[in-house]
Amino acid sequence: MPEGTPRVRQFAGGKANLTYLLEFPNGTDLVLRRPPLGPVAAGAHDMTREYRVLSRLWRSFDKAPRALAFCDDPSLIGAPFFLMERKRGVVVREVVPDRFGGGADAEANRKLSEVVVDTLVELHSVDPGGCDLGDLGHPVGFLERQVEGWWGRWERARHEDNPVAEEVGAWLRSHVPRSGPPTLIHNDWRLDNMAVSETDPGVCVAVYDWDMATRGDPLADLGTLMASWYDDGEEKSALVPMPTTAPGWLDRESALGRYGRGSGRDLADVRWYVVFGTWKLAVVLQQIYIRWLRGQTSDPRFEPLGEGARALFRLSDTRRAK
Image 1 (cartoon, rainbow, N blue to C red):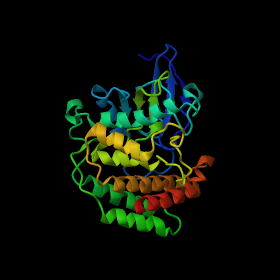
Image 2: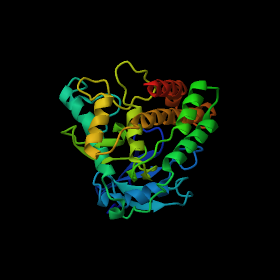
Image 3: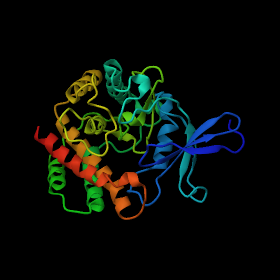
């Protein structure tokens, strides 16, 4: 149990929820999560949902940190927050760290590309009822609500005309596929929301950022992952969370095939999910950028995200045409 007044440090790297390490004098470490500063999109950064999921999911999925306590009183730190256990590991962002070869070790790169797919397969195999999450979310009509919800976010966050964004969004709305059986989904699955073993890049030890977790179409998670899974020659945006063009890294088609074999799911409509994931990620960047543009945050990292969003909208159109 923690004792005394903790030393508080913020984890770097995130662009949404704020995450802090609490180091107590008796050697106990805890992690605190709270929403970002300034206005946030409705339904996003949901501390209540994240706490509920993480207080239960660890029973069936050992990569999920165990949430320990929740506070909905904003008078304490200015927003709802929760505390969870600390899970140590290596988070890989943008480039492969030196401990795994710095991008030059093809075997290490391959392992990283495989573990992010294989861990997603593992999550999608979890029985929600087995960890008391059988009533999480509303799977019926999930994809339709997702598309309409993200369309609304785009309309609220845009600051200029973008015919490509409008055209692809309209195509997504008119071509929603029929979902298969629902599973638990993370809703923001990518490599930098995971941590791998300090000694083996092919072993996942933790998965973070569960504030959008629900039950729904598992291929939505796959599309989110593939949104930033760039192949050689594709236009990249300001957000490149995975070194997907490093030697040995699986190309997108191979990664999709690995998920299909591991999960046994039909991927006949997977192009729609990849396009939706790409378009949705563009909206995410636009939401962050508009906060900077309106002066709701002064973080200089957010200034390039406007062009990053435009690049992703263009990429979503390119992927739609394939």
